[in-house]
Image (cartoon, rainbow, N blue to C red; front, top):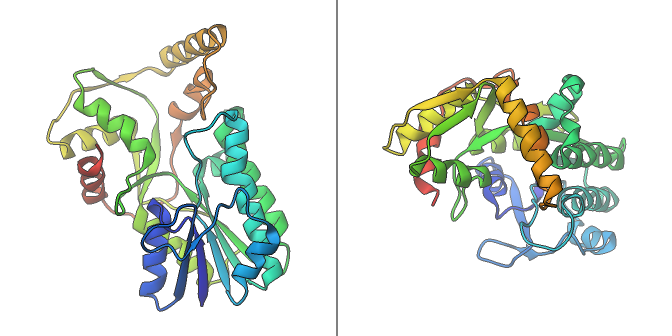
Length: 302
């Protein structure tokens, strides 16, 4: 199979490329910036459908593993739209017109929980809304001729050359600081970069049209932080904040942010209890300990 991976130089895209090649597929890498290993330097935020269709001629499949740039003067909603939604839709539409028969979108497990637990109101957060739009619009564009699987990814551990999970930077800095470790009472599913890559390539091979949550462990926030602290070589005491207390803290912080006109965040700080007090656990696809990947992530994060 001939596969084009958009975002193939990133953390997850790198592993999708390696996994696909290890299974005998021919893979090309598309990325925003030209660097070793990148076959096509293409900015999907400005590329036209026609130019992409020409580039994709002869390919069987595409994978969208793109992300959002941190910098920029656009609003959060606009940055999320231009980073996650529009490029994915344009790529899928171009792939379909070029004759590709299958696609995979690397998405978020927040889409799964917004659909299964609408009462949690996760769509109040800009990031969740963007991921929902990405999944829904890409699937609509794929139509009947092209399969499109969405990989619904929780917190992920693992590294790639020069890459670590974005979320790990804050947590590891906190672990290495003298600030007390206080975490919410909920929890999350976690997985590894290699499990995500395996799910993505398998979905292409099977021409899957499914939404595919990927999880190898379910951890409370306390357990996750304790294991990250142990991996850092600096075990820490970790205390849980009761859900009602966190809720009041979030509402107060959100009110202050509005009064001071603080810049909007990917996740609305006034409703952070939405995403941290629930047990966002998934059925485990391949249960195993992620201790090695946790250590790898903590030790590689600066």
